[in-house]
Length: 169
Image (tube, rainbow, N blue to C red):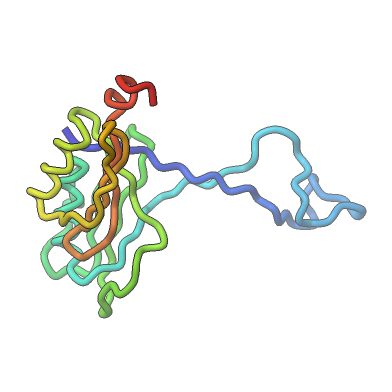
């Protein structure tokens, strides 16, 4: 019943070694020479700096429905939430740092409910310990909700695919 979101980052490789067969003397080394699909990098982990790795990993485990690592315990300097092996999704990694969050996140997760409506998912997440931060829902049913996890990291809840299909968007 969790959110099974997939994350894949595509990175174009702009710097090839001069010994590469794709480079020659009259082509700058930052030019990609092969036509077709760009080379890619897979995002292995989405990492959160936090005060309490276990508490935050447990929250995100409940959000996603994915298990925590078997070796994760309260007080550990790291904790992980593991996606299903065949999902292609990135794991969520939590690293203990001494300082707290002080400014808005430059990146955040957007969640799309898989088995319920956006509004039902917002209520579920608040019940797990999230806090309502900003409500961008519109009267026509579009929009999203920005929540905060237990350490104040922003994340958004979008409409489900079924809700989007029902309204043509």
